[in-house]
Image (cartoon, rainbow, N blue to C red):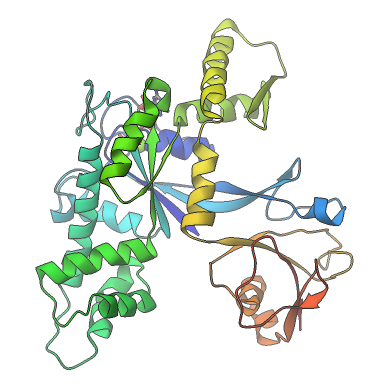
Length: 379
Ligand SMILES: Nc1nc2c(ncn2[C@@H]2O[C@H](COP(=O)(O)OP(=O)(O)OP(=O)(O)O)[C@@H](O)[C@H]2O)c(=O)[nH]1
Ligand SMILES: [Mg+2]
């Protein structure tokens, strides 16, 4: 699974990316700092089933810290989007095709209003303008790809459109559904735009993340206005606060648990000042909002689940004797057999069923797996 971070320039996309991945990337208070996309690995979090089974896990692919499993997920941060990108302005189409690799999108906006559409300093800038712009550019660009389809009324219209949109990672089943739901009989500017909109909604759910919440007093009011205007999910964050916490944690200065900062070493007065500011933000908002946003996008908007495959349903181990070694992120409708295929193609080939280790019972083969399920695949 891959999450794409988009938005116009200077809103804090790379800061968010760095806070999630701790990759060294360029962050600057100027427009168009990022040109080439940054790619890295971040983590969504789930409760480790070790507590339920009263065992201690030996993580292989997903680290466990204090009973929380950190499941890896690919993150991509791209250049700031400009008006006209769909027609090739700025980095134009390249940027847009980079983002279409993603299965879900976080659009970062600057809720403080302290930077304008071009990323320059201002006051009271309305981020709704940016949301409209990003919306328009993505839809216009997808519509232009749909419009390349030459339909003369003979073949299945969905098949014709899919030939073009498969390149931007839109599923065949989605194209079929969209054509049916909109009752599309011909491809023109209007139907292409409507299809683009619905394809995005189905295949690339988007969360709008209101960044720089540390710089406003009336956060709730600002978000309320946006919610009234747009049919998107909104959350707020301070990417800068999260990044400071993660870096301080990496340096061994603090421990961050249950939204509380514990000092492990004596901090310099500057560090102390920064941590105090962040402490206030966390107390006021109940967190920095960053991890919460990623979890919400993956588990709620995208409906992904985490499953824990094991070889021995009693000891909950793999072939090496490791307890609850792996945590796999799977799509909303993934069946036990599809989980088997993620482990190994041979296991899928010889698949005979699966056991839910919590109940000890066989699961239904054509039913989606459940979030948090510990599965023994029978071969
Ligand atoms: N106050 C505050 N500033 C932030 C926050 N996140 C990022 N910034 C600042 O915003 C500026 C831009 O950050 P970047 O992460 O480079 O922004 P970007 O969206 O990647 O910008 P481009 O790559 O140029 O499009 C930097 O000065 C950051 O320190 C935040 O949560 N709060
Ligand atoms: Mg950037």
